[in-house]
Length: 241
Image (tube, rainbow, N blue to C red; front, top):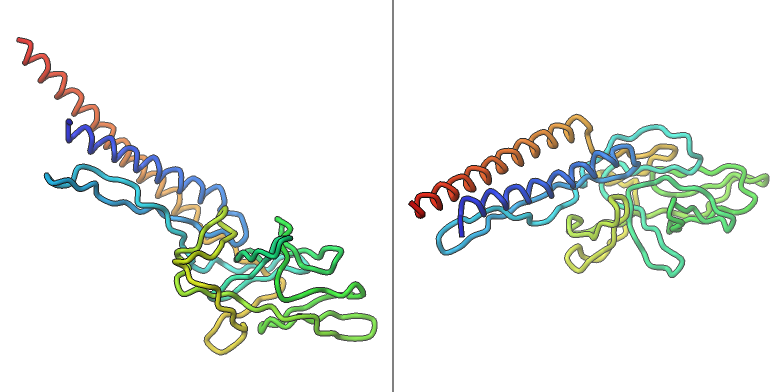
């Protein structure tokens, strides 16, 4: 095995994988609640030393995105840690930072995938709805104000191990630990912001710089492959002479 050729080839493959992840981050930079991912790498070790580089898997970055005022009547954003708990038709829970909800005919608040926000149901006679920073949902009806639920936030001991489904939806795993529900609005804890959305935590300029860096690393490894191939060709010609 040509060690130089193999090392350069694995570097090309690793940077190609890195480019795909950064490109996906960039494509979702305008998606509310989207959390960008970053690739990690590991050495390919042998008895003779390091032989190359291999992708070690992507991890999601749960840094806070910017909160912006939105026009949706049921939009919510989380300031701080935590996730909204949403359930599908079978009751299976998933978790998201995307608080873009709309009211369905049954009074539930649902996201774009049709998953129901756990903790609130809007009465059919509601004229308007408000959500306090502590998660209490109040509906204004012709008869006055009416409490119609409380939204609690899910927290995890190791959120980095949540299973990602598209960057805005996550499922708990054994490594992430079970969801622990907390009431927002407590001192030092997360708060809910009604009428706002959390934007993606992907910075376009930073993502473009990452793409340029990955492209340069790919090109450097490609030149390494070419150099190793040329040395093999020269060695083969010498052996024939």
